[in-house]
Length: 277
Ligand SMILES: O=C(O)C(=O)C[C@H](O)C(=O)CO
Ligand SMILES: [Zn+2]
Image (cartoon, rainbow, N blue to C red; front, side, top):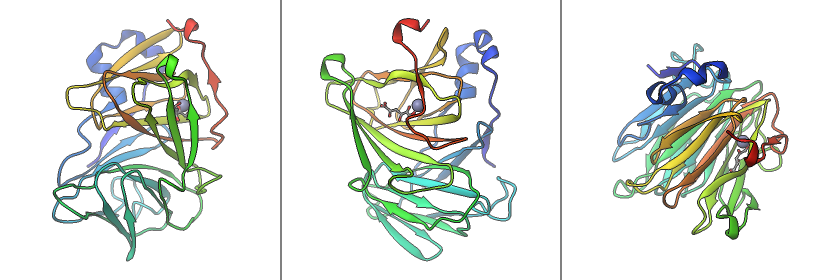
């Protein structure tokens, strides 16, 4: 059984203690050697998951947890490789994924098998899946094929390169958007300016963070913010009403995935930092 996050109203946030806040918005322990783990969130019905195959490939495809005959009967998915080289076999079609490549898996897939090329340097697959309304062919998007966007400034400690993979201009999907953002050396702040997108939710998976380091992820309505202290491989669910921004105590990168009413990446409302409370 998948763990389930039901989602909460922003009006409830002021009464949450740290434990409750983390239970509602933070998914920990997804990356487990030799396992596939999923979490089902009622926030736009996004499923997030991770698979860390060792010697033996790991496979999934049944729909019991999502209420359809197959997992992909009414869903699409992006699978990012955050680790060593690996392979994904979708109904016999094999795709080789290097670090920071993303595979789009379209509606109708029956079985997905995930494997590491070298168990000593295993692949670490991270998944975002959302409901889909049409069949689109499975497709590998390499890091070089993704559309880069350079943002931020060294003097503000927020220089970073964002890469769009599953995006209308690169690899169209039904309603999933997915990409990876790498911070420049010495920069610590992501997602400046903090913003809201009323029509889309977002999931952040922080990775390449040292074991002793943390990202302080800020969330909540602009006038009532809270923080989540996030470790390597943790996933933050960011509802449409929540700002998102964060700073790392050491180097890190993150995968962002979005879904909602539209795929208009640039449709967002920046919130001036001076307005945050
Ligand atoms: O560093 C950034 O800026 C991001 O990666 C922002 C996310 O992509 C995002 O929040 C999209 O809405
Ligand atoms: Zn955003």
